[in-house]
Length: 250
Image (cartoon, rainbow, N blue to C red; front, side):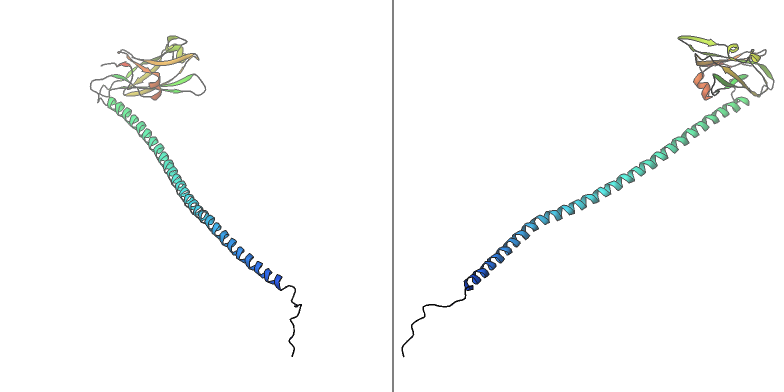
């Protein structure tokens, strides 16, 4: 039997080769995408870690800021409380000082009245007070006179006041007739056995600046009592710092 010669033409499917290449390219593309994905994840992870650390640090800083704000608020409240307490304490001390000054004045007055001051008997100018009259150049004047109760006799007379001060660049003195009421041109009359308060009103010129008061108490048939008191002292009502005085002696 005669052998067949091989066929000259072989019939093959047209897309077998391209099909294999297509799968090869798809495989390479898949591997490349995996590599790119791995690289991307690595880079992203390197970036995410610092971001997370920054967020944690930011939260910690915010917490510290909140704590500091709270501490500042507490210190401010404590400072306000201390300030209020300090003002209250100062007010209390001022009030106690005023009460103490009044008690000292009362003690001196009653001590004088009952003869507790054995070295100073007779008539005494115990108190001088000035109070301004609102919206005027007038001043209310109060003089307190005492004498030792041991004497037990009535005393009478008149008290006058003069005011020293500055008018322009000159030192001048305004006597009682230029200050007081015309109805009391001779002074403020007094008559008492133990003590008496005299009240009067003085008026100062607009261009006059007072600096000192001079009080003269003249009892009938007795030695006068004179005293110089600064204007500021008369406003405070405390004459323990008077510049000088001469009380009547028995």
